[in-house]
Length: 181
Image (cartoon, rainbow, N blue to C red; front, side, top):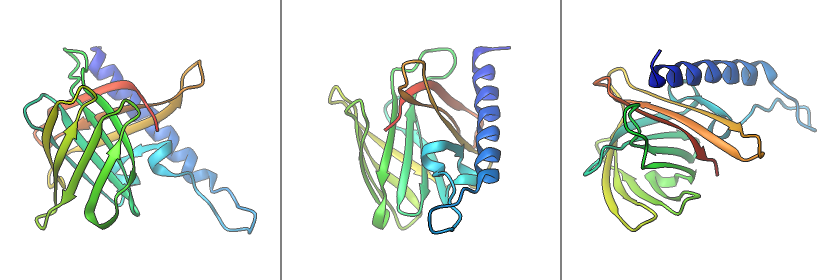
């Protein structure tokens, strides 16, 4: 089994476990109402956990971008790891996505800004920690595409995300151990 396939199968398995546990949990709050874990910070499959999601490319790079939105918040993953070459871009962003705009910063110091266009495409810029600026576009997938993420804690108790992005053409990007916000 290749490393990339093993990573994808692990992510799918962990995601399924997390989703079924979170759906079964249905914890009660102090006022008796049912509460559920936050899908953006606990892990999920964008097609099931998010209100909407978009996938696309970061131009002038090998990186792909995935955006999952729940209510007025977004989880964004940018990665160029392809299973052959290790990722040199592996950024996670979590924050507000009100009014169709995003302006987010990763723990590594990257900044992502973008706007949802009238055509339903997110377009914007990624500024990497070294200052390199790259444009991106991400569309709502009309054909088979995917965005999976899993949040876990490493032995030093650091919260981490693992992610996988697949575009409609079947190409994908994945890496693990990006710092969670």
